[in-house]
Amino acid sequence: MSKSNRREFIKKSAVATLGVASLGSLAFSPKSYARIMGANDRLNVAIAGLGRRLGAFYEPIGLKSSNVNLLYLCDAMQSQMPKAAKNFEKWIDYQPKQEQNIFKVLDDKEVDVLINATPDHWHAPGTWLALERGKHVYVEKPCSHNPREGEVLVALQKKYNKVVQMGNQQRSAPESKEIIKAIHEGVIGKVYFAKAFYSNSRGAVPNPIQQAAPAGLDWDLFQGPAPRKPYFHDTWDYNWHWYGWDYGTAETGNNATHELDVARWALQVEFPTAVSVVAGKMHYPEDGWTMYDTMDATFKFGDGKVIQWDGKSRNNYKTYGSDRGTIIYGSEGTVYVDRGGYRLHDRSGKEIKSNQANNNEGGTALGGGGDMSTLHIVNFFNAVRGTEKQNSTIEEGAVSTLLCHLANISSRTGEALTCDPKNGHVLNSPKAMALWSREYEKGWAPPTI
Image 1 (cartoon, rainbow, N blue to C red):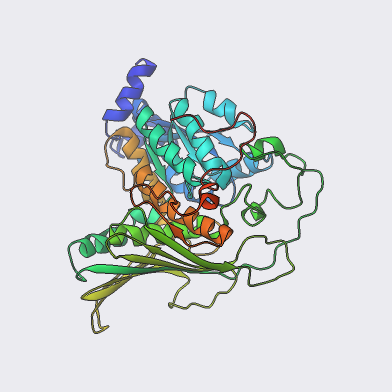
Image 2: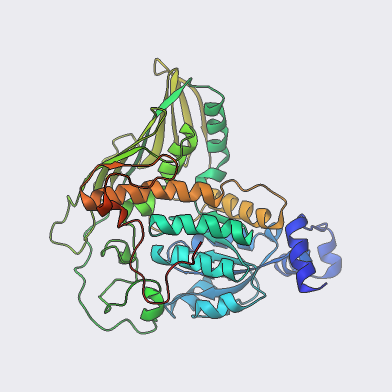
């Protein structure tokens, strides 16, 4: 089958399967069999970014029913690749290629899918570079580093007609889908308000000190679209989240994306009309954390609906009884929903239904993976094949991410924002709209759309 016909087949066909009983007669191990079944339907996958989120990809790639071939492991830090390959050994019986240079990976025409688990500032650029080269993309949240990048991704997805899905994995949780459907059907009457929250006990972080980049780190590649600067100690290993706005999107981009997405899904709202924020660094005043670590944000929408975000990065008091989740209020009742399931209450507060999943999806602990992630990634693989509808399109991911960006912009400017309900653009502050995009290293600006 020609390469072009193979790609067309991937779009149109279901996952090919053979009877398990045939394994013995063929003398293949289950792992070997997974590589042989449905070869024309198999997706060649590359993972870029092998940090703490890597655990989310072991199972969906390792499942024989996924029918994927892990072609590349890629990371700007050399030591991440052999470590990732070792971790995959219990899931696959072959060795993926290890390639530090993401451009070589993307230029390989055999790659069908990029899983983009790089730092935040690489999410949108890595995605558009992949789209331009004909790849489908699963991009971790937040899908962009700034609002403009989200607009670019939505436009480029349409232009190249590829599947792009953000890692808002609660959209694939059966319990969440069940209760959101019931909310839309009126189980708690007219919905009007959602409280999304997150509490964690992150500790002090080192004060960054300028020094040579660690051995094995391609610092220029790590910086990618960001303006060039010297390396500072401990930046590359997760703390890029908190050391200024060059690479990260603070805790709101890092985690509010999930709960705000659920709130927006439940209330069926898109762009806000107003955003106001109270935020600050409230803990470890002398450490290297340069962002806020505490935020209360309010988003108002044109139909009178309101979403509030309560984010506490370094105060683990469980205000709402758990470390993260979303509470949806309606005229006739209330729903509490999180990664573990939901509880439905009538207007008097009496619990009338509960559906709790027996899953292992991570909450606030560092690392990633679990049942919801597996379902979401498999849904993406099948959407690429054309056998399943996406549980969340990049349009949905971009709007939820925009709420996070608007909260960050409000916190950085110290202004309450008035927004255009058609697209979220800020109407009352040139200073805020100046943060709609970012300064890019020469040659890294987004494509013109």
